[in-house]
Length: 98
Image (cartoon, rainbow, N blue to C red):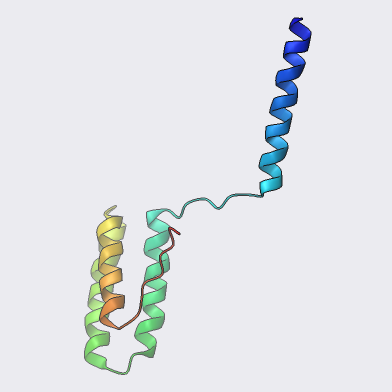
């Protein structure tokens, strides 16, 4: 009886493992540090295309501030600052958490 119970569990575990493999690899959540880097890169592109130099200067200043926040392990504050800089330029920040 113990052997049948053990084989049942092995079969159930094997089935769950196969189901997980069939579903494909899940994307890991984007870390806040990665989000900082990606938004900063998006902002670099937006700054390069903006025609208004005063907006570009303001966005660059916000980017420097945000990069300091991200480096000081204040990523949430840095992400918000980067998002605000992008909005200043009329660009919608990419949400990497979705």
